[in-house]
Length: 186
Length: 275
Image (cartoon, rainbow over all chains, first blue to last red; front, top):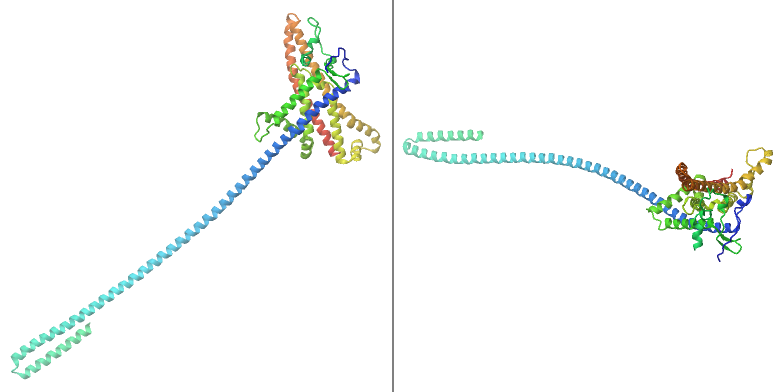
């Protein structure tokens, strides 16, 4: 119900100013309870929730950044180790290559020397055999020459038997001497 | 409903019309006639201040709802303002006098004080409302009593009833004889004067602000409408003064809310820590 009060008291006097009438207390109480409900049940919890979430997010972000940094550092140190290892390996390979090259050169030298000796030997053998062949053929030639000479001599001086004998003897002796000298010279 | 609207229209309608001279505000203005009364008005009677109080309350509740609705990690403009406000109460008031854990615990109460008092104060400079409902004793007194209960309960919880009373009434380091004088003084200052000063400081500031603004605007209106010749020019001066005092009253509205909340926090902090 709504009604107007035509006459109502004005301002309270003295201490009355500080004593609220019940209707004021009730209205003020209702208003304050409404405000308190809105703030305490709605405003502040939302604010704190967002605040906490944000703090958590920032902390989480910092933590993640730290982790990433640590990971990078670890990776970098791993990379360094790997580089060092690669360097050592390269050095080793170089050493090995050098050694291999030296070995190859030595082997080639040995092989070449051997080849040279072999060639030399075979050349010597060939020379020897050729010399022998020449000697043999020479002997045969000398024989046939001697025979031819003997025939002549026989033909001319069969009359003189003594002379013929002396000549043949001397010839043979000479031949023997000659071949001996040649054999010693070889 | 028309009675609500007419209740909001400034008090000029009740003035005695043209040529009635300058209307200077009186304390009676803060106790206007109620326009809605149930029964004999003991438990429900609504006057202009009550209506202003209801409007401020509803506006505040709606703003808090809008600010807190869909609170997200990356805030929008409304949410930023809302967070700035509660964040100010949290960081600048609660954490200034309380440990971080206690600051969180008391934040709902202190934030209620701050935004509630500010909302009820600021109506004093809002056109067509033109008065703060904290100019009457009800809200300041209720809040001061709430603070009184809060710090007494906090003290008893932290130290036990005996210790809390003893700590407050018998400050350490004084000669035993002095307690005859000190105990009553301490009792008065801690348990009586704290709520009284909270109440009177807030209420008196709002009354003074209202008188100041009402006086300057009344003077401006009078000088423009009724004064003659060169005196009209004085109206410009009084209007500038009225405008400046309006800005000042906005500041005072915030300052009184801040002082009330900060003192409440300090009282609670002192009670928890003991001496």
